[in-house]
Amino acid sequence: MTTNAEHESALQEAERELTSAASAQDVRRIWGKHLNTLGHRTLGRLLLGRSADKLLARRAERSERD
Image (tube, rainbow, N blue to C red):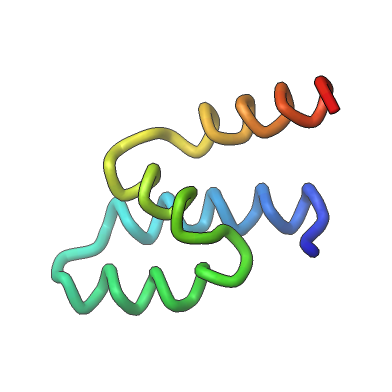
């Protein structure tokens, strides 16, 4: 299990990398690099254009409810 700081760092890094990806091969490389930390669902949301800030806010909101 990753800490919040590790998750936030990986999320922001993945967002930067996916934004600059120029090919499908780049996306596959980035996906494999961040899969264990972020998971398919989060990576998919980044790939479809949701910002890391929104994903982090949603994660914080869910953790407050629990």
